[in-house]
Amino acid sequence: MTSTVSGPGAGVAGAAAEGDFARELTRDSLLRLARREITAIHVPGFCDRRIAAEAARKAVRHKALGNYHKKWTSTVGRVHLPHIDTAWNPELTARYHDAALPSIHEVRALFAPYLSPVDQVRLLLQECWPAGADLLRLRGRPCFVGALRVFHPTTSAFLPHNDRIEQETDAPEIAGVTEQLAANVYLRVPEEGGDLQLWRREPTSAETRTILEVEGLDPTTVEPPVHVIRPQAGDLIIFSSRMLHAVTPARDGHRVGMAAFIACKGTDEPLRYWS
Image (cartoon, rainbow, N blue to C red; front, top):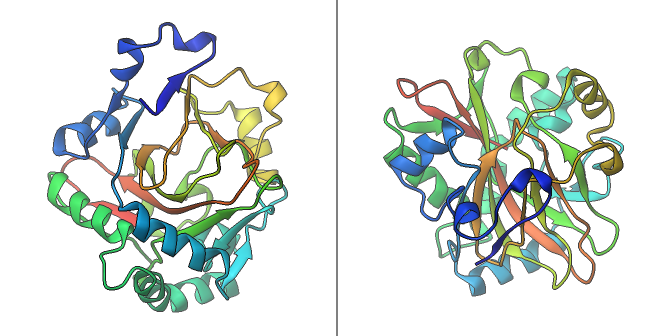
């Protein structure tokens, strides 16, 4: 089992912890996750490890590899501009949308002739969700999806934080979003570190103000996570990005993954995905 439970909020381990996860991306598991009846969908071996390893190698050396812009995320690399780094700046926002489709095609080409893991997730979302799924458009312009994230050895971490699209844009298309999920496909993982930590709560108002400023909380000010997951290369994990989550430092190698967000407005509306 690749999931472990830690912290006082966990209660019991073993079968009870396993019951907080789904092992397949299906209509039922997606609905249960959107209703917060489970903590995560964790699909081991979602992507072939050989394909994942080759894509990870390309990501670490990619010409478009930059860094996130906020204080506590600036140690983490990302290939192509993600929406959070538009930072409410009109010029960056225009650049993001201008590059969205070319960036999707460029990331897809890293996996050719195979289907990219994010494209596979997109297909499954379209098939599983009652109203289907589609690429998010903001003010009518397409968004990028399929960001490659690179955690460098010893220096990169995500401190406890959450992610909400309404904190990044006031575009009319986000009205009515009731839940936001994060989908991560792991391409390379270190022998030590790089664990995904999940809490079963959203941040307080004071914590939210700190997250918006520096994108992370001092771990000593937060209770232990409810779940700690050590992903393996090729795994897919989907969880609520509105609840607190974190990534521990990668100790002895790069941690590389693909990331997408998924907005939910209810079962009568299509899911919308982006990075």
